[in-house]
Image 1: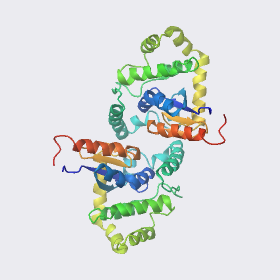
Image 2: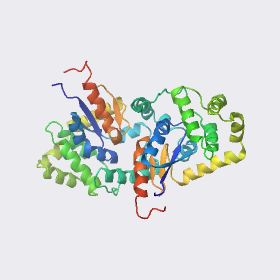
Image 3: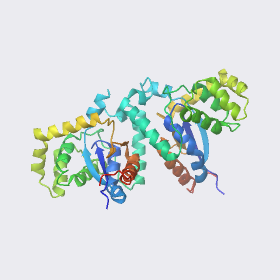
Image 4: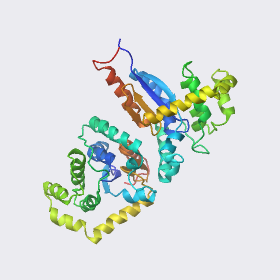
Length: 209
Length: 209
């Protein structure tokens, strides 16, 4: 049996289309035989480096209005709840710091989906530590200890280093997918192409098993 | 038999993703039983109204670099040739003025596809009147007379009025699709959803036959 290819899934907790991707990426990857690597990151510094002080959806109102309508339709098509948060974009800094901690023990996917559901399915504020505590507790995790570890200098540095990687790899939005050969795919609309690319790559004769 | 629903297809000649849409929209619409209304327009004034002096792909280089790679992949997936034009965005003003003239006599779809093929399949400059003359002549049309009519005040005004409609309808990019109930769908990636929406609309009991 050949080694399964992997796809990196880079997402930002404030991002509406990252929500759609996060809720369906596991099933799609499993069906394609692709291993998923979850990569929470912050879009704010990416936008700032481009000269944007906020989300493009806030900077360009016509595009923003369309996005909310498109999200309603796409969420309905995918069978997902969707409510427009009272504030947008939400501050996903603490959630991203927490999500980093779950990558090795394996609870990042469940935590990520729960955060998105709170944000876009239940209109809760994901910057509120009480919301994150609820989510971690419901997952059977030691919420207090995890939130404390999330705010350590070591973990803050880890998220900043991911930010450096984001810049050097040319990421400009979320969600973004990478295959092992460095191909970048942007947007929930490109999930299938990213998985197809990874599968095709693994079928080539030079694939390292 | 119920009246077929229609979908408006708004496109800009300089737009790369409009090219992908233009080359596949007729087959997709015919299979869905949807009547297509072709709407050439100019994105420049739309970008200016948003405070952008050029295409977002030029304003945001990381996004631009990604777009060229994504276009290569998507064109290959759709079986279309694709070459990056020497200049981008190209000036599609004259082509848009010409395309308006073919809506009633019915040659706008063929003209539009020929312009996009020249631009993205053959690396030709669509702002060059000689290129447009070649295209019109190859379609068996009176190129000289059409180019003269395209530059009349009446036709220039017609294109400007379409620009007013573009602004009032909230169009912010291309391609953009509208169903009869005013739903807007942006991007080549939303062609299928626009057609599905139009078909669903025509199946409702209140559809005016």
